[in-house]
Amino acid sequence: MDVTEYNELGKRLESNLILRYSPIALKLLFSEDEIPDGTLRPYNDRGDRLAMCQAYAMVRRNRESLTMLKDDHWCVWPLVSFGMVDLDDGDYEYMGGMFFMKDQGRSRKYLREEYPMLKCDRKPIGFSLAPIESCTFIPDIITVYCRPAQIRSLLMAGKFQSGEMFPVTLDPVDSCVHSSIPVLNGKDYNITFPDPGEYERGMTDEDEVMFTMKAEKLPEIVEALEILSHAGFGYRDLKMDMPTNFARPEFYNKMFAKWGLATGAEWGEKQGKGPVS
Image (cartoon, rainbow, N blue to C red; front, side):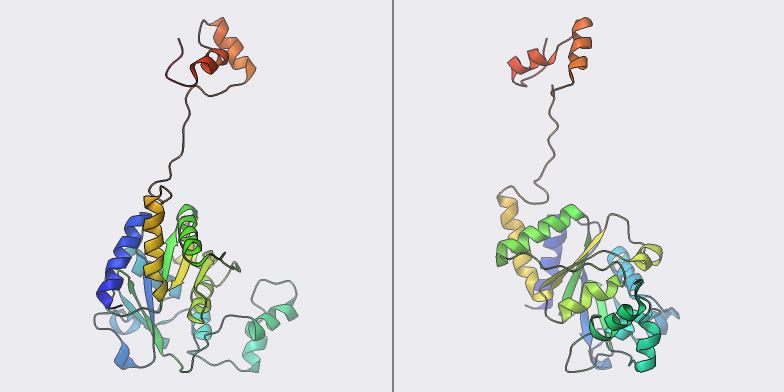
């Protein structure tokens, strides 16, 4: 697909899910020649350094386009996981105890052996971010911040196309890493809960969840969302039912009878069609 096709599919994704914020397109960069024109460099252009979650917030909320190289970052974990910095043994020992695990040995083992690290033949210098509907580059992954009910629709779309359940491992911290690296490393989709830093500094609401997909999966996800919508199972189509004349506790009917009002028994004869006299 070309860029304009991604832009159009991004608009359809937003429309189908009635998203509050723009889905985020991310592209890895391996040289400065690859930096898309018109993207903001936070440090070069504004003297600001950002956590990755803050960069995400600027893209999805303000619909800005950013490029984050090493000097633009203000958080440790994206620098580590995207391979923009190197760790020595002392770093693993020092930083490995910071994963909210009671067993510090287990925590250090987690950083050395299990923490998501980008697997790539070339070492990236950073990445560019933009709203999918206006990005000027071909993205590698797309991240959507949405409500749980919208996640349900995305899960239904992925299941419809693949016939498979989504394998998801949830971690309460480092959501920037867990939302991006596993998908960049080959996973089709991932679901992530925003971490405390996202809540405190990235302006992420308490009802938001992150859904990330390979960019190449966008056409089939949008297609499935629209097929499900035509079948009455789209996000826009599901409606809560508010039954009137509903069944009530016995004392309700007793008091209503005393007051000369309709009781539940009479409602049963009416089968819920209109008011009971």
